[in-house]
Amino acid sequence: MPVPRAQLSRPPLERMLRIHEELRRGALVNCTHLTEALEVSRKTIVRDIAFMRDRLDLPIEFDSGIQAYRYTHPVNAFPTVHVTEGELMALLVAQRALEQYRGTPFHRQLEIAFGKLAGGLRDKISFSPADELQAVSFRNIGLARTDLAVFNALSGAVLRQEEVTFPYRKPGETKAVPRRVQPYHLANRENLWYLVGFDTERAALRTFAVTRIAAVAKTGKGFARPADFSPEKFFANALGVMGGEGNHRVVVRFQPAAAGRVREREWHESQEMKDLPDGGLELRLRLGSLAEIEHWILSWGAAAEVTAPAELRTNLRRTAAALAAQYGR
Image 1 (tube, helix red, strand yellow):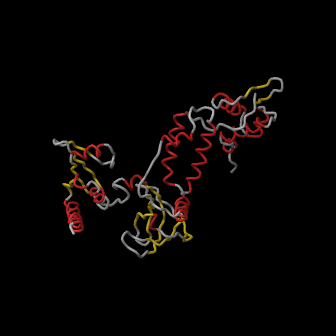
Image 2 (cartoon, rainbow, N blue to C red):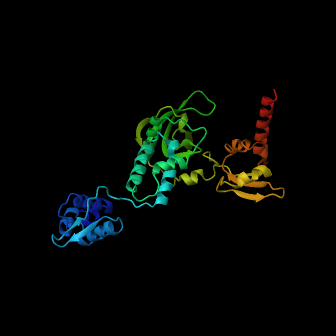
Image 3 (cartoon, helix red, strand yellow):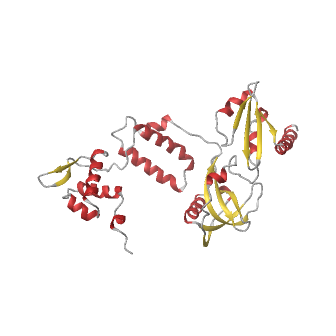
């Protein structure tokens, strides 16, 4: 069944770019010519030209002598996006933040896109984008050394929904074990990349640190990502990336010296904070696993004390005893 003509029309930006090219090379540009070339109505052409003139500030006028539109002066670049100076500054700050992901497939494309935005607004902003390099900086300690070939293979498999295999080394182990996975999602948490996927041999969702994947191979099989899979839901009960089926109520008390720093951040969507009479703070969380919270609590040293659950207190007591033995030699 033939598709109605209206559904075959070009997207607005593509139409306007075509109109711009016609005007730029000095062609006879009138509604009759454009409606035939772009397969749209006269009303659509008039609306596109009005947008280009009034919203994109392109110097278009209708010359009644030749009954056609023209540029009143030469135009080289088409201003595809209107961005204010404040918005550009925000984008440049975001670009600096993304420097930590240098080497990933999208980093170069982002660099090019930011360059185009800055270049197109060169006459409309009061600062040079180069000045921003001196105004804002980011530094992250312990950036992961992600293998670009592995990242490219995984991101491609996620997008194309292709099953993959790879040798995976668990933390603390030296030998890698083959895994067969349907990759659902790539997530960055605390400067580390993780793959969330369905492990076909274990018949369960698993999280894999990309830095522990040595190589990726396709199995030649496709898969359909479940419609009910949601990264937000998957990570909802995790402090970082390690979710779980549990339902742990974690309560941590912070001494006054650390309370201010705890208040300054959003640690988890389930968090509840309660001020204590001595100036300290009680933080309550609801987590699906205790795998990550122990390391986080230890990072606060003696300024944090777990009051619940008992299992976590026991684990911390065991770790504290091992530390005391190690440093008491």
